[in-house]
Image (tube, rainbow, N blue to C red; front, side, top):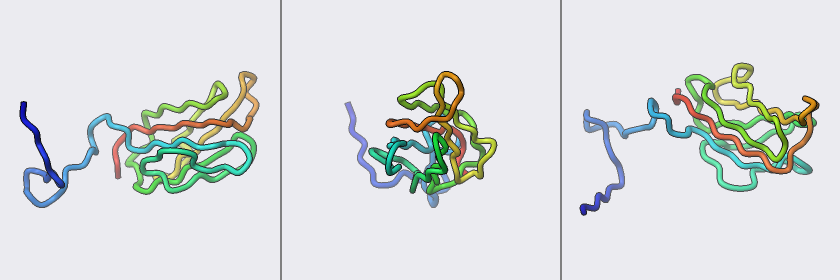
Length: 119
């Protein structure tokens, strides 16, 4: 078995780093506390902050924008939950949490992962 060790993998042109722009890899992920003082509560990737706009209404700000907000998986401690990428900018993820009746509620544990292409 071989071992590959590298600090940087470059594209075929030899000058630019290889980036995951076309693959199905997660481009942003965040776990946050949606009750009390809303804050990132664990591992995050490509997310700089979470904003609370009221009951069950949040927005994650991305470090690197997406070309399009598509292909999203979202889970909270409540169900159902939605992510409406079409209503946000490419660097923002609007997130809504609701109960089974469709009424917005704050969620203690929110998890959001975004798949798509980086801008």
